[in-house]
Amino acid sequence: MTDSPEADKNAVEDLIELLDLERIEMNLFRGHSPDVSWQRVFGGQVIGQALVAAYRTVEERVCHSLHAYFIRPGDPKVPIVYEVDRARDGKSFTTRRVVAIQHGKQIFNLAASFQSPETGFEHQSTMPDVPQPEDLPNERELRRAIESRLPPEIAKHFSRPRPIEIRPVNPQDYIDPEPMEPFQHVWFRARKSVGDDVALNQCIVAYASDMTLLDTCIRPHGVSWVSGKLQSASLDHAMWFHAPFRSDEWLLYTQDSPSASGARGFNRGSLYTRDGKLVASVAQEGLIRYHGKPKA
Image 1 (cartoon, rainbow, N blue to C red):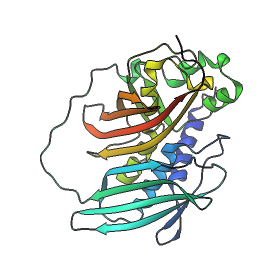
Image 2 (tube, rainbow, N blue to C red):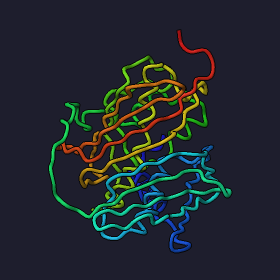
Image 3 (cartoon, rainbow, N blue to C red):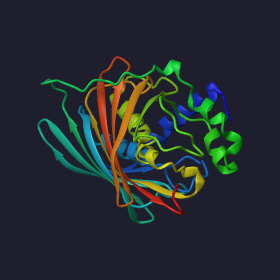
């Protein structure tokens, strides 16, 4: 596996470049996908890029919520065109709708709302008491232990430099998982400083929010996605931003799945800073379709 801090920092720069869309008309933007030889575009990438497209048409307001649907798999070999509909510019709120297009068809759509900063009532849930990230093995250490058991194409995918550092509190075996309760806690952060820009930090966290969430509803069923027996995909994704944060500082992503049925799993997530501030909430439903005979 690649263990290069410089490669990881370059991966963060690559992510920032990935989110820096090309404007091709007033409300049209073009994004690209990284060359990672994967079959479809990562969902978090499309969420992050669509949010960037919406932000490019908004001034002096901050996104407080987004709601998105994945309609078709994205093709990583061709650019994605993002078309922004300037739905409303009100006194306090701005609304945008974004459609992502490939091969002349919608692959994804997003609605986002932006608000002028203001103060008001405040309360929040309490952050779970979990080990600190320094006390946990990192993702590479966990995967190094199983690297020899992975199919070559999966091992290559795992070994690439990654912009987001992940440290799971209660990891599950990647290859032969035992059933576990449908919740997990994960610390994550960008591997390099990205600055204070609110929009950029939100877009990076939107990208990262799709990395582990769908796994939560699979945990009770003892099946690995590397086995080839599980078909999974994000169907929709929603986020609410409660307070500013830095994506390059540790965030605790606490996740649970209250229900799975009809080949779909429902997942929820809460994002806390190290000092216990709840800064974002997430919800997602995903396809989880099992191919083959389930474990006895």
